[in-house]
Image (cartoon, rainbow, N blue to C red; front, top):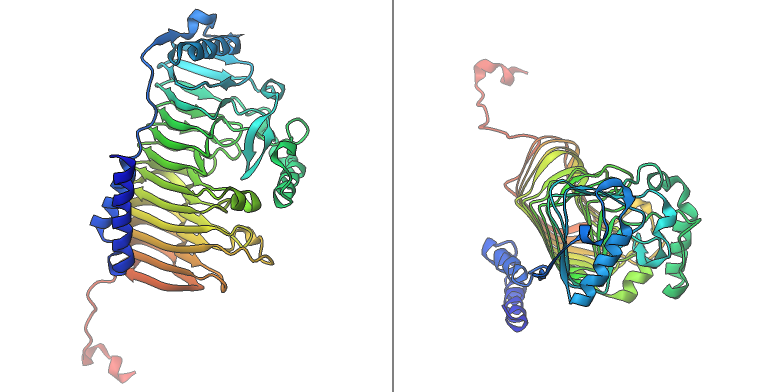
Length: 465
């Protein structure tokens, strides 16, 4: 489908929504809108010319530093105009990051493990990146690409961040660096002057593609990340498929799209120490200035396990829209199934969110939307517009606290939200809505089913009481 045809189709679909609000969750219209987005997502074009990492001096014995071999292979690929770099079975130690070039497919064959050094000094000098929604310079992500196109990581191999003894211990030390980064954000300090790294304890990401387009990450197994596992920053046209996780170190989010558009996440088995998918879009001033929403994101056929299944926010100041979560289930416990979070520091918008045919086992909260996340920003006036959220065919076996929660603000109530066919076997609180308007609830059973009412007669004695 050409870009012009895509735009024309979206114009028609949005017009139908605008003039026929009663059709807002019509399956035909929702599917047409989703499919128009899918037609734009192709992922990377993979190069045909193959080279082996072994030919550049790598040795998969877990002892030899293979970073020089990766550097040489990437340099050769650049000279060739692109290459498919094959990493055969073995354990490859890396004393430093892999920096991608354009038109490279990195294939980790079954039995291959990239094991990164836990020594922080190996991830210097600083590179352009972001940290919790603020642009800055920091330690290099372990696998990093900046302003590239057509990049892939594929294969049944393992990416092991090996971060348990160093980076995973940094959270207790990060407060000064974290606060300084936010102060620079709010004061709009030029990004070139936001230099962190050594002494600030801000952990790098495991995989980050920044300002890139045409990306595929498929089938690999990810473990022991220093921070977020896959960070897709200001990038577009991406497929994340078949990835497997056992990443339970501190803040090991599975996939974090930020300022990112046209993204397909499918057939992934999550097992993370934090959010499985966390859609973000910049913090406060940086987000407002960038003005590039995260949009056109489809999450389907995934198994969730970890802190939260799908999260939107809280760093989302450029806005989030056109997100589809479909046909997903659970592989274990999640604290919350779907969690949408913002506060009056953020501004921006969250809109056009569709959740269909998803199931969870045991959770604390099933579907939770709050405009007061962490109690931050309550004295500020950057309220977020949260509206047009459509939930259909959502199931859960046990909800320990609350099944459906909507928490708006007086300044910006949450509006145009519908729940259709939500079934929860056991629930502490069925629903809790505050500062909302135009909310629809139909065919929902929250905490079990009520059958046919019993009848009463005089012999029951109730009339004599």
